[in-house]
Length: 86
Image (cartoon, rainbow, N blue to C red):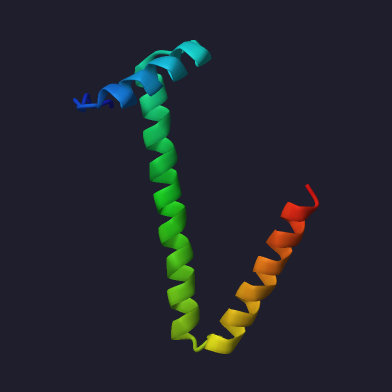
């Protein structure tokens, strides 16, 4: 089953969709449908990941503030090192 929906776009949004449709040689409807599906898929994934965190917290699987800061600083250092090596 399909459902038709009307959406108002700004001129800038319409231009982006027009160019993407031309570049991919696909109708705008297919581009929009793909965008919506990716968002729906991402939202489902995100909610599942959040639920994993909630479930872990409910089991008492927590880390301290200090550990969070330590992990964040380590990740930051790794990203800076990668950026320098480009």
